[in-house]
Length: 248
Image 1 (spheres, rainbow, N blue to C red):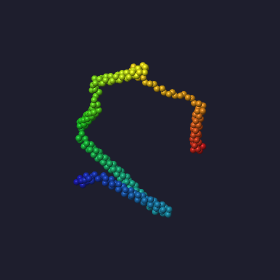
Image 2: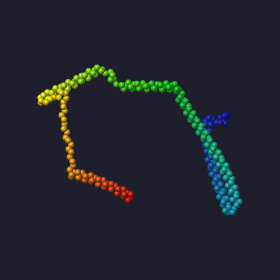
Image 3: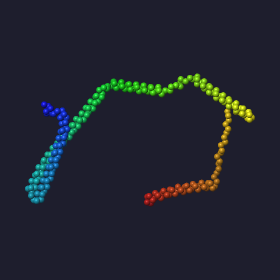
Image 4: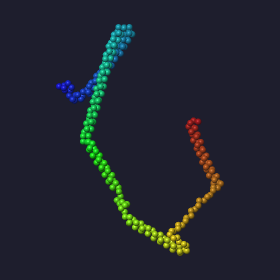
């Protein structure tokens, strides 16, 4: 029984769209009727003017009465159009609100389904596990980056013995060099140095301090003056080109 008055759920869902379509079509029909009445008003106005020109006032008055009748109908049509447009705007706005509410409900339902398997305790546990794994990864990285043989694990006694052996070898080499130099010095009758070998000095040639003579100095000055004259010629040439561009 209620379906007879209000329709099925599917029909109720399509009702706003159908109402919007019907209202728009009826508004278009009234606009066409309004345009036709405006044409009739203009025609009656022209006929009244023609009758006055011909001196027939009675016909002119008849045309003016028809014009007033058409104007009255036109005003009523305009009122109807205004009412229908207001109703159309209200239905469209209400339908938009309904669709927005449906979208929000769907979004809320989706969020509810997403959060159905989640709670704060599970989130906290997951975050703790992540932190533990991050710390473990850092410890593993530090362990991998450590050298395989630590400096502290080296045998200090072994290092001391190797150092003494190295010093002994150096002393033996120095003594052998001193003995060979002493023998060479005794052969030539010159005193030999005790522990070191003197390096022969190398005399470097000194830089001559020569002053330029008169012709060379004059030649240098001439080249400098020629360069200055060339720079002045370039400046004058650039100035002349600029004056030519400016029309001076």
